[in-house]
Structure formats: C-alpha cells, structure tokens
Image (cartoon, rainbow, N blue to C red; front, side, top):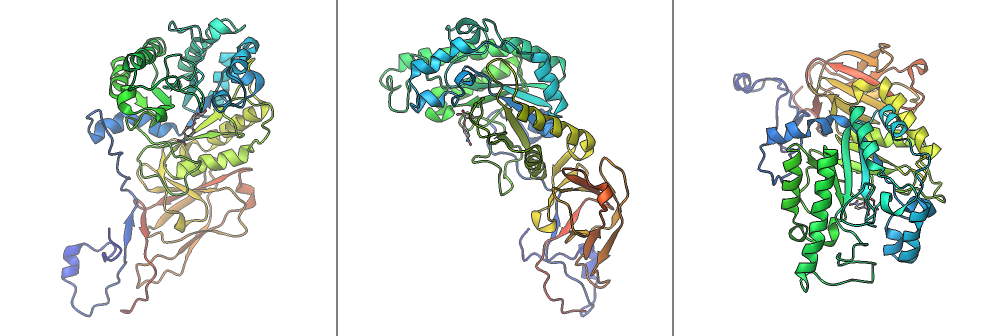
Length: 470
Ligand code: JFZ
C-alpha cells in the first residue's frame, strides 16, 4: 500500500461516502495489515502452484530449528574442512593422512540423536561428503570413504540416519557437488586446475556420472526429506545438470526439499554473511550458523558463543520467519564438544518451556513497534514478544490498533497487568501499550510474553501527522 494511500481505519468505504462534509473524520495514514505473507520465491522450476509448494514446505516452515553436523577426517588435526588443502594451508597428502586418525571410537549415533531431539530441533543435516570427497557411507564409486580409508572401518552414516528416522526427525543430507579430490573434477587447489570442461566434456561427463551415482546411493539408502547441496558456485546449472539432479531426487521422494545452493533450483534461501539484518524477502529461508567459528571440529577454536547468544539468534530467526540450522562439529572419535552440548541443551530447555511461541509462529511485527523480537501465531491474533534482556520498567508496544484482551507470560501462565496511554477517543492513532513484567516472571534467558488481541493484528504505520480536524 502506498504511503499516501489514506485509509480510514475500521470504517467501510460505503459508510464514508455518507459522511457529510466537515464531519470530523479521523484519518489513519496507513493501516498496516500484517497478515500478507511475503511473496514466494519466483524460482519454482517444478511447475508447482503456490498451494502445492506451501504444502510441501509445511514441515520445514514449522521446524524452526535444525542441527547441522560437519563430521569428517578434518576433525583429526582440526583443520578447516576441505578448504585447508584447497587454500594450501597444508599439502593435500598431509590433509588426506588424517584418515589414519579417524577412529569413531566413541561414536554413539543414538546419543547424538537424543541430544538433537532434546534441543528441540525437528531436522538434522549431516555432511555425507564434503568438498574433500570423503564419503561417510560405503560408496561404490571409489575408495575415498570412512569405511575404506580409516580405522573406523565402517559406514558411519547408516546408523545415524536410522536413529534420526526412529526419533521422528526429518532427514537432511549435505552433499558437495564439487569434489576437489576426484581426478575427474576440473578444480584441485585454488591455483591448480586439472582441465577445462569445454576442452574435455567427456571427462566432465564422467565426473557428473559419479555425482549421479552417489546421489542415487544416498536417495535409495536414506530417503532424505531434505538435500542440502553445497559447492555449486564453481560450475553452472547446466554443467551440474541441475534439472536432472532435481528430477532424480524427486523420483525417490516427490516432496523432497532442496536448499538454495544448486544454482537457482532450490526451495528456500540461505542468507549470506550471517544473521540477516533486514527481513529476507523469500517466504522460506534458513540461516546456517556455527557455535564457534568453525564448521568442523578445530582444537584451537575456542571462540564459542554462549547458549544465550545462540538462543537470541534463534529468536531473531523466528521473528523474521526463518529457520536456524545450528552446526556442531564432532571430534574424530565421535564425541561432541561440551560447549556445543551445553548450547543444544539450553535450546531444548527454552524451547520446551516456550513451545507455543516457537513451532506455530510466523514472522512478527516490524521492529519499530517493539524493543525486542516478536512473532505472531497463525491466526495473527496472538503477538509474542521476546525479551533478551531484563526491562527496567514496563515494556512498550507502539502503534497497535487492536484492543488487547489478555497478556500472559508464556510457559508460566502468569497474567500481566497492562495499560494503554495517550489514546484519544477522537483519533484512530493508537496509544502506547505498556505491560508490567515483574522480576518473578522473568526467564533466566529470554522471557516471552503473549498478547491476545481482539482480531488479527493491525498496525498503525504512520508518522503521527498533526490532525487538523478535531
Ligand atoms: C560452505 C562450505 O564451503 C563450508 O565448508 C561449510 O560446509 C558451509 C556450511 O558451506 O561454505 C559456505 C558456502 C556459502 C555460504 C557460506 C558458507 N554462503 O552463501 O553464505
């Protein structure tokens, strides 16, 4: 709606025409209806209707939290996954030698899944094969796999996926399209190339067939709900045969969801450079995020965020209508760093207490209305306010046109007192909603307040012009 489009709040147009000239009509410069969702991604190469896509995306939309797992031979020396040899921080041979130290000696896939479940996550995405080409499962295309190259000596993917499905979580598989180890892949290190696709299309074709074989292996053995591609940036959609990749996945699961890193063939966007500052325009999005600064385990990276910090980012994602895909990097023996365990446990504690303000929510009201984060229930008549701080006085909501019917503390049930200030009976410009929040109702981390409205939320979005007609 244009800024100059005048709308008289809650007065039907027909009635307005009956208003005699000179009658003091109160104008509301822009009544903002929050219930219009942002447009779906224009890229829908599956020929689906909006409703079909919404149905397919439904579990993802409500999942809110996923756990990402980067596990591979790079955890042995704690070097950056694949990039460390590609960027020549160490020689390729030395990188691959880490395989001899990958034991999975304390690997307990049941315990991994129970921790993931405890965190409140609804899905998990595991690196089946990173850019180094080392597969976690027993692939038949080559010997670059955990079962064939390492003392672990077994497929470590299958038992994990089995537990994931048993726990009722959605299965996500990370798969790097590029494979810097494969002798038929054109790129090796950042300065060394093996050949160029246009000079040797047959060799490229050989590589592409490897990808297809591995994708078939993954689809038939693990029936993924979500494929999380990576490494697409080095080639074009045509070179990856992106449309055929999607067709292949769909032939195993027609409802499969695909992330955005397959050259425009994905279902949702992945914000770049961290937590988005402005609400992403895509209807579906997911922030992938590390707890320290590394995806895989690195002994020297102690830059862990606290459980509170991660939780605050999670709420930030919720308030902007997206998911958080939170990464853990297990050690070579399969143990998970304590700092990461602590984060997942705290997520679980908080989500369990506040579940009504997590899974069934959508993006909240624009940030100008409230000093904190917000979401709405599906009907739009419960506004959830998230406070990652301890307020020094009543908390304030500006520009709320609805009548408030009740305010309570989520996960606690306590009713809160509230008042509306500066509401003139002759104006439709709403007053300030002030809610008292006693210390006794505070969550140790992020307190959530539910505001029940008389109807779907309506916001005043004007500049508060002088009203000349009173
Ligand atoms: C990729 C990988 O290269 C990296 O090792 C890790 O697996 C990560 C999850 O994915 O790195 C990227 C690629 C793209 C973006 C961020 C990290 N991006 O678009 O913001």
